[in-house]
Image (tube, rainbow, N blue to C red; front, side, top):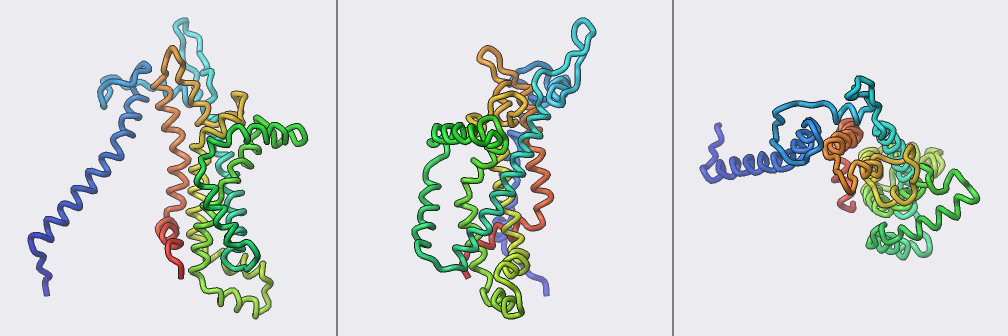
Length: 296
């Protein structure tokens, strides 16, 4: 039997599609502007959306490809954009891995164990998220400056110092994973322990494989947060070879001259690692984003 849809329902469907198309266009339009700026000759922010002349000078600069100068000699770009991109990916991957390890174990303690001060600790994690990191920049610089005297690997101008600094912002990840753990019946782990597994084996071989969707989401959020972070990286990193792309891109914007074309090409490059991680993680994204929302 055919299903008849009334006219009001049809208009709702049409309106929903029009709204989604408009929303997608609104999101894609700024990206198209950035792409257009990176393909225009010269470093100008204004101009037509479709460049009349396509120029790859900004992409040559961003990719470190030498360009011929007025006298015929090859000019090598003076800013190592690809090195900055590699630094960003390296720091983001390491900090996301460390944050995932710390948050999974901490969330397990809050979700499955009973100990004194549990509610106070959870409340403290919530309160810490109320204050932006920028308020603690002076303290962060002072702490890592002192640590660097004893352990240079964790001092100023070190990527490991930046990874350690990023690892302190796991409160939200702990709450997210804790909510997911609480949706998994504890009887599953108890059954594994009855069969001879240790508590660690029950956690590692039973609980974590079942929590894979939320772990992927947490890793993705930590990766994105680290690769686009600017305040802490600008305080802890100093020398040009060690900069991340978020910090190094500021060197395109001089007080006397803004290199918008070069900046646009570098900005597009910075989005490639995030897009790659999204593509690899999309299999678990939908289930992971909704799993920890409700307590079972």
